[in-house]
Length: 496
Image 1 (cartoon, helix red, strand yellow):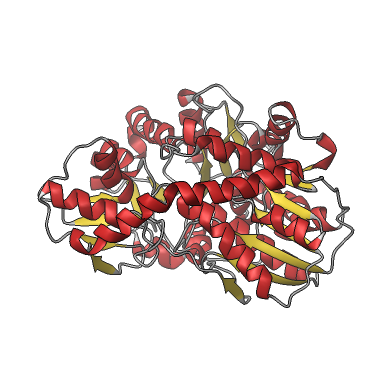
Image 2: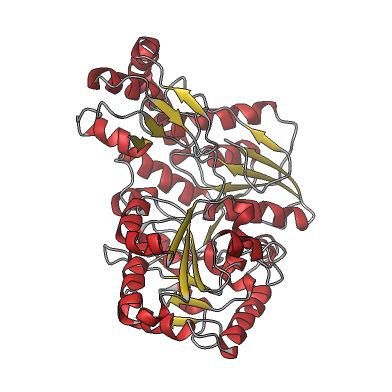
């Protein structure tokens, strides 16, 4: 039996013992592993022995016995209030400091801060976004440094990897996010680099960009991809222990940033109406793609052969198996599609690429079709293999659905621009920005968000190859090249 780290920790928070059969816990990175002491303690009281941790690289370590993690756990608990007080005081100082607004003024030397405490990421929207922006900054001829908590997939430039010491504080939720501020500030004490601008990807509890703005008296550009408070509440994330401080830091960085880059008008409206951010310092800048990596000339033939797709009309999806990507909605549409059009069973396959919290649910729901080859789940793939997997598909799917709380969808899915760059026909929901970027019958076939029958009918239409579908794909690529490359994205920031 094996659990994800989240599933294992859910047993702890709910005070339920691990099953004695538990032998494996899947984690992001065995070298940056939080909650070791907590998991060791719970394994002890559950009577679960010889549990191994395995990460995305298939590297394994044995969960240490509690006798080896006891003292670090106790030290974390003792130091917790002192660490919290120390950083709260710094946040208070930054909140009360006089706010100076700096013009961006096309800087030549840029510091890129990636402060997320996410490790061993090999694929996903954040991977594509981060590498795309960094490469585009380089193409502008800027001198820059990247400071990061981890290596960055797809980034070949030199990265200053700053320490995230999970041996100290790693047993307390969110404490490592807070403590990483000190790693950034320590690096600033020793660096010889003299940036003219800071570009920071906003992350949980990180105020380092604001502190460096004050230290160096230079502008701060904040890449803001959404509120962690909102995401934690609405997307089933981990319960936030330090919610008030998270809200304070979030409001601090939004107030002090000189330019806030958001990916959609919905995000801008939220910042203006909820957080009181002046609209003139917000840039709406949709995500993008590198068209040299994603393009129609990629064959995909090896992938089609590997998965027995050569004689099939293939509908492809790539992304996180989670609520907002609409994967469960798509699963229901697939089941109904084969029910309504049984003649398609031998000629159509659905290629659903990725993993996530709804993966097991989708796999169980589609199990009869998976067994018969109508649905293929290759799992999560490395970012660099994404273009070849998309090239193996005939039609690409973006079935996003509305937020469950009734708020507007604020995303700008990177998959959308990757699809467009591939020059293939796209079937997508017309949800918010998706319906603004894609034009029905011109650059995509669009259905009403969450409308099963409309989606099923369009699946049927697109299952029959026609020249007009290929023309739609070519139109999408042309629009992408004109507006939605990472180069265009970065130019709008630094050369408005």
